[in-house]
Image (cartoon, rainbow, N blue to C red; front, side, top):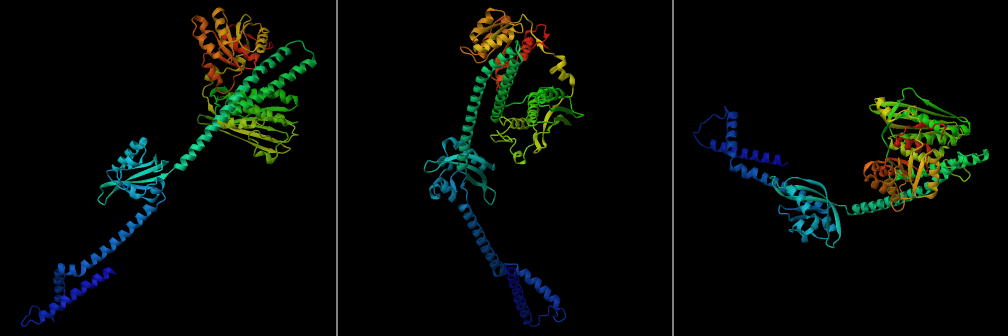
Length: 602
């Protein structure tokens, strides 16, 4: 509309000027510039051009253009004023603290939310130095550096710092700063946008406190269970040791059955203790997997051999199927893989009254990883659909009633699930009540390229038969429990060993310094001086005495205990209750005497 008005004004001016000129020219007598009746159009065009040239001067500017420019300027000024007012309103009422400083660091912007969280109103802060007056002493330098960067055009995002309000309360703020420039691009200050994260920080601190409390509780529980494990394993060593001695003595059939029952019950108790300790280690994230080369086919076969006698008792067929293409040599944690498979087989045996159990293994190779798939299928009782969802939960059993037929802790499957997860795999079950169950899992193992490297690390069982130490081997047993002293000495003497006994680490140190022993079996927890301290002192002795083989024989069996004990200078590690075959093999290995086969002797 304004453009049309301007055009009309110009046209009116042209028309008026043309008429005036024409009338003036026609009123002059004897003026014959052009015959108007012959060249009317030419004359008009010439006049229009002449008039437009004249109008380019002050006349048309003041009469037509200036009013238009002024009106447009006033409208633009009004529009900019409205925009500025809107922006100021948004700035002032934003749900976040906004502030501005000039190049000297003095406050020149301060919105309502900044007033709200600090308690300082705009009039109190305007013109005052922001860092000097409102930032805590320990953050003055860092906040000042952030604002100084912004003045140089370097913006900062998510800078966290505390400040105190006028009442002395701490406020945690998340700051984003940006450079403020004028219309010519010159830096005139900094605009800061904050976020009050005090409540968030308080919640984080509360969560951290709760986490610390939970971790302390877990640590206390772990320490308690470790202590209980030690206290239970120590007498269990005596119980199972005495039963082993009885089993080698002259017994009638009834007495032999009593001994077998006691031995099986003791081993079952140890299995329960181990399950609880494994679960606790997993809860506290202390369980670490090993990564070593092993023979996968041998591990699978050993799982069948270990559990076959249980299947035979119930007249169950236990079958292993190794699918073509399954690598023989892989790397990973062989003992934990074996634990998973044995747990699943034991479960299948427990819940199967008749029929068969089939263990199947196959693998796929991708790059340097072996994806092992293993299934354990039984023809047993099956599992109700309602129980499948919670089957892998802690302390959960398919039958939770007081009249349940099968005993257990409810930890076996959850341990399997967590071990499989640590191996970057998953486990599942497919079951129909009354028709049996199929448990399956997949785990990742390392691919081994060369058999020779594995054979050197893990020779086949046929290549390293069980060994018996030389009958003249002199053993020093450091053990504070009197009953365990008697049991361990009797077990070793029965195999022809010479055994001397000391009751603490100080006596062990004195004994190896005065008598020539071939090996030391060292308990860890003893009065006066513990086994690890004694070992460190023995290692400081000169000559061959300081190099004597020292093997831990201990009830400390939690994850990390073995590494901690070996780091003290001991050469090897045996768990209580004593496994006589493993103990004799260990003694033979470290005494380096000519071993004799113990097949049929133990």
